[in-house]
Length: 264
Image 1 (cartoon, rainbow, N blue to C red):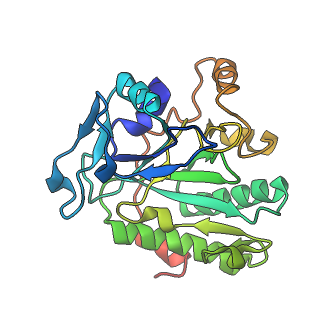
Image 2 (cartoon, helix red, strand yellow):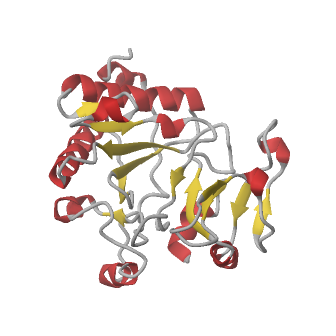
Image 3 (cartoon, rainbow, N blue to C red):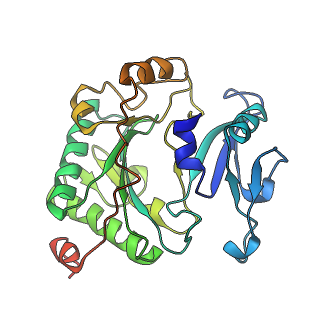
């Protein structure tokens, strides 16, 4: 449980529950619908005034307890409890038209990474466990939510402007026909992204798995690993970690970056 805890331990979390399994009714459990699970900590309401108290998973025992109570997916904020008003990452969720071949997703991921390279930003990759890829960009805790979301939106719009045949910066199925939506909306305060190593509430129980950039071209799909095959994946890594440098990577959004994206 150590790897998933790295994404869960220091962040507010919410989860998708399926007490009757993925074939039954699923519900997105918000803090207001909290179940009493040992080790799930209710945080100080003052951290998020006007909303139900946030929750935090602090231990492997708490994670196991949540699963035993029917939790399937775990989602986390883009800010840690050290400072909820200063996100320490932003996420680009590459969300494809389901009719597109997987090759288009790989190309879109590489193109997005190239743009981030040009901006001087390092991203960490994971499969979504669904159809797409997630690019997580660690930040220093110096920018507010609106600033970070605006920057992520600028990246999305820049890609759509450069390659309109490939990318969309507008949500909704009609706007991504034959394209990939670069979803920047997960960067709002209170929004969340499925955690690394979380199971997804889908047929086959796929898992959202961190990958090395060098592995990208060999990936077979965003749902390549599931609950059954994940242990083999971890064994093959033999202690190697695609996100080994994640915690030590801290970057800032600069005026020069904004100008590169046409937001100067």
